[in-house]
Image 1 (cartoon, helix red, strand yellow):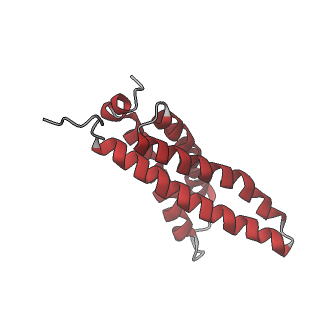
Image 2 (cartoon, rainbow, N blue to C red; image 1 turned 90 degrees about the vertical axis):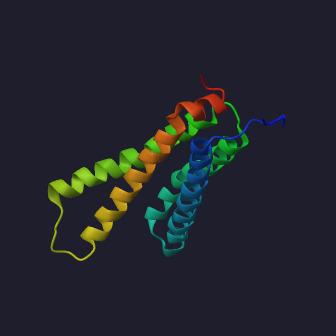
Length: 138
């Protein structure tokens, strides 16, 4: 019997927190690359600001899930809806009108599918009953 005053963290909560941190780090790194495009005089780099906010939110709530903070799982799953939605739209758009003779098309499609699947896994882990009980969301 566990006599520790701390609640044991379920595997789903650990996975959700770790995936949130990993996704946040990847999105933040991508945002830095986008912001570096500003030095080239390219206005496309301004998209790095909202991407940086998304990455920081994913990182912050991933850490909060691991710490067992209330409502962190719900926030993390709502943030994960953004890359899931964007990649889902991109997959649909590519399937509808992509030029399949180009070399980079399959790599882009693979990236969007991977992002979509990882986002769905993160949302699922945040919605698991054991994660919700651990975070006090039930």
